[in-house]
Amino acid sequence: MPFALYSRSIKAAALVGSGLASFARTRRSAEATILTFHGLSEDSEDQGILDWSLHLPVEVFRSTCSMLAKEYHVISLADLVEARSRGTCLPDNSVVITFDDGYASNYELAYPILREFGLHATIFVTTGFLDGVEMFWFQRADLALGRSQKELLDWKINGKKLRLYLGTYELRQQSLKRLLPELKELPDTDLLSEMDRLEEALEVSTPAFEDLPKAMRPMTWEMACEMSLSGHVDIGGHTHTHPILARCDVMAMRAEISTCRDRIHAEIGELPFAFAYPNGGTDDFTRETLMLVREAGFKAACTTVSGRVHDTVSMHQLPRYGSPESVLEAKATVSGAFETLKDWRQSCRKAMSMI
Ligand SMILES: [Zn+2]
Image (cartoon, rainbow, N blue to C red; front, side, top):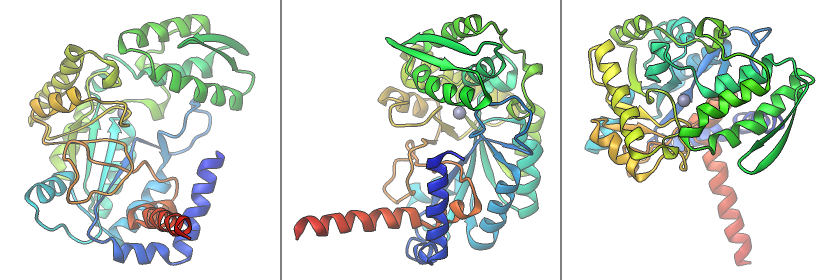
């Protein structure tokens, strides 16, 4: 486990064990929380994937859902948006579950658990991924580094020289971690040609959809329709090909957002009401993106900026927490214990500076 996650798990255990999570749960009950998941996995062995951060072990999701069903009110994103827009009250300790991208594991592994516990979720799908038109560029990078026979690659990107070591599985993971942030900086028009260049340099072919490891595969539209009809799942938009919208020009941005909306409408039979920005950080969308998402008819949009959903939050910049790595981390997140600790630290620092 990477050190940052390890220390977050220890912190979460301390916050829950000390009673701070229970205290925060009571004190911050009026604040809603939105959780972000991506894919789920049954095991992380021998599937040829380097970055497992997008594929949470299914047992962690199951224990998180069990805890949420017992101790929290899991509501739909539509109910949250309606209450916040009208200024009406939400149930205490409301939590919204969301998934990004549209992996088959949402249907195969998450959906049965949602039904078992009677929970609702919104799945933000990348429509070109479900159409089988284009896999994600970060999947191509993962598989290129994972499948290459090379042990070393010197790579120039963004004016930097990266020496990518590929001698062992761990070295390949570290190299991918160094490469992904650089790829995210590229203008969208250059990203796919950069992936072609990378695959060529690593002497691997672009994988076909049938070659994707199980955890990386997209759900089908039939899966999305069945979940949507069940009442447990809403299908939201996450662009057509998953570019970082801030790296697109306005025309490309508009096409990504409207194509995504229209494909969902055509397949599901309803216009999606919510959207999630790919990557979702504050630098990953612009004022134009917000305007275009509104223009396309989306009533709400989610970021990946951590935070709680207060009364004053913008419906098109809803904060969301990333996927918890354990049920203790889920508890520390949804209770508001992490936020409470942060607030206390800030107050202490302020008090010390006044002495
Ligand atoms: Zn995404």
